[in-house]
Image 1 (cartoon, rainbow, N blue to C red):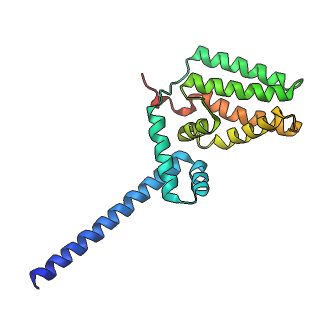
Image 2: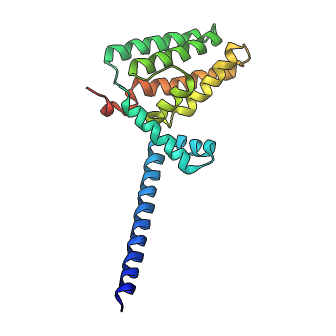
Image 3: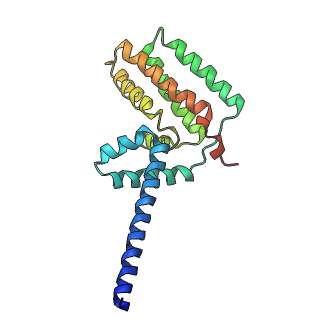
Length: 185
């Protein structure tokens, strides 16, 4: 076998090994993103229409999230928010639209208290998606009903559903979403 032939075989084998390594790395990355973001992974892929672009977006969300100072709540703060939620929930009987709007404000306040920026809804969703991707659809649904409620276009059943949706995210944020290990000292 000539040196040229041997060199060609070595280059071909090296190229195959590199391709396999890259494919394996992409598969591991995709699996990690799917596990971390849950249903938000598929939603982002569907919205972007391009898996690679969606994965870049999700990775960018992770980087932004890592730069935030997300912190667990102290027990006294958790107790205060629990009392506030109870008050908002009891308001629902007499003033359901106001209760939904107050629930939105309370969830936003809780996010802020934990360290999430709260400048606009779309950014809040992206920031929450990193640690709360499995609960995020609740937040989107509640937010849509809240927008209807502001215009007095939501039914009582929609308003009730919004309270349930807000409660799902509220509970997760209140319990630190099981993510206290990511808190910065």
